[in-house]
Length: 202
Image (cartoon, rainbow, N blue to C red; front, side, top):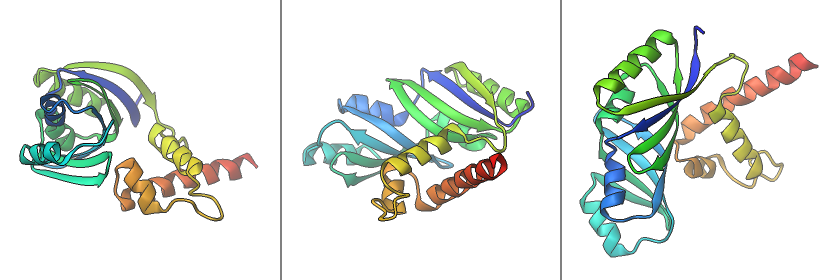
């Protein structure tokens, strides 16, 4: 296969700063999404229950930035760990992140070619983490990625495409933990593929 690829990776012994905080404060939560930056990482965290003001204050003092998005959702900024910095500097795009358990995360990535994938895996190995490649799919330019399909399905389910639209673009973006321009671009590309498929099929 030449690429581009959609790759699923399981990374164990992950030095994730947000997971350290969740464990330190015994918070029952999961990470919904991340935004990688050069030296910091932003996380959208879903809480299983409400966090009282004392717990929130302690968490705020241990992080670079903490904002309440809702009663059960927080935006937490931490220093970027070695894996986050590697993801930011490598020739890959993070499509999806799922916390499997403490120090173990599942990533869905877009990788342009074999060379970039090999280089990324070698650099991960040098960081001392355990990496398991679960799946590699070559992407057809007309085929929806897993992330595009997930977002289209959620948008449809929540009534974004209804005549009397039940959710706005900004509300949908908040639920997904991504910016409005990013969501708009994902929807535009996904809908273009759907329309092209339908027209060609007819």
